[in-house]
Image (cartoon, rainbow, N blue to C red):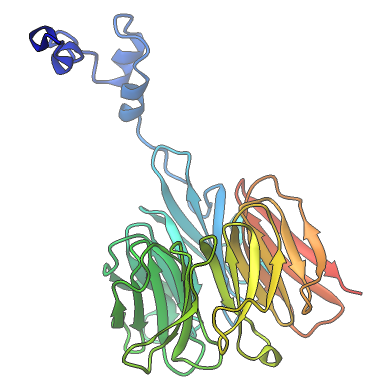
Length: 368
């Protein structure tokens, strides 16, 4: 091959100096010499800000506190810039009403995790830039109003999981795309990381869950096809809950009922939910096939639970893992669920579902 005759690709495809399209939109619109400059027009077009008290169309997350207040977060995946925002309401029944919004805020990054803490006036938010934010909705000193208490950038990757403890200790557990697991203390008015496990998993952490009865215990799962039980009282806190699964784990929760003792529910990319006893690792006590695609979220309400996946369906199960209802009214992904009423109500199961395309559905399931 005669390399002296080869084409210099850089010079061949370089924009000539004479190619100078207009740099302003009005002039560009009138120009006939430089047609089809869609990319340039896109860059010159200013993004349209989302109106106050209004959420993006992709509703992703919801959380509620003991007082019944609700925060819903959404993200924009199709606009000029990908960003998120959240709005709050006094009750679940008010969700979606712009006139009844308690507070709202636009975010410069995608909101990836959201949860209330044990304090009704404090909530935590994580985003795709690795930031964890502690927000307050008011206190006796500053009065009512939303304000940022603390903001920490200690994760390298995007925050993928967040769960607060329910005991006396004011602790919260976070996981990220880089496989790092961190435990935070927010009891002194700010966020202070007490434990950092940089290589807790060898791939992205997909979910974490704290034990409802013991502050020191937690579980996590990852794309590395493993799940771990963590006991933060120990010098080496990790215990393998399940290793070398045939698919990546995507969701994990402790079972709420005390009669279920030490059971953990875990979902995978193949659309299955498994139950594992923390005292008997690497053994699936039960397998529930839910979807033909990944499980996005498992949510318990007393003896019953709901499973959400990368699908428009939501499946509800009783304490024996028998289906009691399939909700398929959504046209796109259903992303989160808020339970209504008491968990010991045996006559009706009430909840609110939310998802993409501004999907919002208040659901009442009659139980036999």
